[in-house]
Amino acid sequence: MSGHDSAPQPMQASKSPGLAGAAKIPGDKSISHRAFLFGGLAAGRTRVSGLLEGEDVLATGRAMRAMGAKIVKEGAHWLVDGVGNGCLLEPEAPIDFGNAGTGVRLTMGLVGPYDFGATFTGDASLSRRPMGRVLDPLRLMGVQVAARTGDRLPLSIRGPRVAAPISYRVPMASAQVKSAVLLAGLNAPGVTTVIEPVMTRDHTEKMLEGFGATVSVETDAAGVRTIRLEGQGRLSGVADFVVPGDPSSAAFPIVAACIVPGSDVTILNVLMNPTRTGLIATLTEMGASIEILDPRSSGGEDVADLRVRHSALKGVTVPAERAPSMIDEYPVLAVAAAFAEGRTVMQGLEELRVKESDRLAAVAAGLAANGVEHVEGPESLTVTGRPDGKGIGGGTVATHLDHRIAMSFLVLGLAAEKPVTIDDAAMIATSFPEFTGLMTALGAKLESLAE
Ligand code: S3P
Image 1 (cartoon, protein in one colour):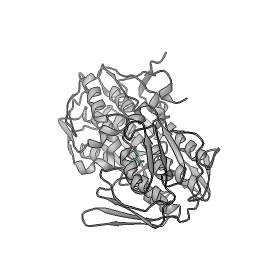
Image 2 (cartoon, rainbow, N blue to C red):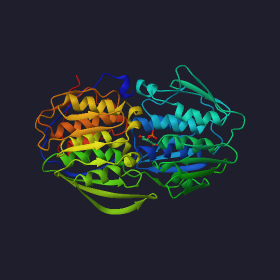
Image 3 (spheres, rainbow, N blue to C red):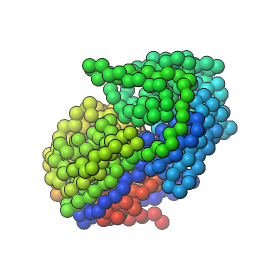
């Protein structure tokens, strides 16, 4: 049973002594989804190590099984035997993606061009999120869509006899939309082109190449990227695929160490792909002590260990262009900003409104409930901090089925004067099931209030 079906699990975080020790961060969620998707599609076996076993990723694994892939866990590894490009089977039943936006959007792209029907469902959060951003380019390729309410789940799609390759300029900064179009292109004859005005995480293009697809990327002087993919090529399993640690999960212990006085924590095996490191850049500008230790390459990606010590933070203005490289980290950055001297201004946040919750509104409400001075704009957030944490805390935060809102406000409680309660910790399992254990081992005071 997934978290959203069960009774809410309130949790409280209290002022903690300095956090200390080393923690290994679980696998990257974006790369783990893609390991199941591409491994399940490619001919032959992919052996995956370091996979994130969060509910979102497991939903993608079930979807690929429903379309013919064989996926089993053997010891610490996942063995994925794929069907071969172009050979997915029609799913017999609706596919439930739970809370997973990446899972459903990428899978809709993957199966869109197939000449069969597929139905997608999700939890209350996912059913509120816009799917038109993926369905619009699929329609251009000849895919038919049947949805009850707007372009929202539950919905069904059916591909044409032969899909038309397209050239598509992605209208918003979205790796999911870029990826859905490229994945649809895998089963269309000819070249599918995606034009990406603002670079977003590049895991799809990098990994597709690793699985044998013919992909090229050109970046012009203005930074606009043109990605071309040759359709209907052969994809082959990757003998040993390694998933690095998730920087978006690392963000929680990193910020916790920055704001809890006396902390000295080392986070091991963090993905340092430049499309994902915006939070580290921002915290460093704020005065955080983050040392990058042992930078190395793992599975074709840069990784490093990060030593983070409590630091006196000061407010900064975060450039809007940085948003795509830290889009999932704004809630926890707002928490860091609550303990920084002066104002932190975050701009270009329009995409936060369509995440697992309206994250801009959810963060603002959580800050308000806990006495943190802030101003919410249509696409911006300004937070005025209190380095001593005085007056912060004492509130209950509505998490709206959003794992990152849950974890961010638990981190707030670790340095606040008064405890912080969240209404439901269940969704944390979608992306970071180890969160409570890992944080507690570092010394964080977290207490379940569930009956
Ligand atoms: C993701 C892309 C981002 C991000 C999400 C994971 C991906 O979403 O917020 O957590 O794996 O491609 P958008 O593409 O909607 O910005």
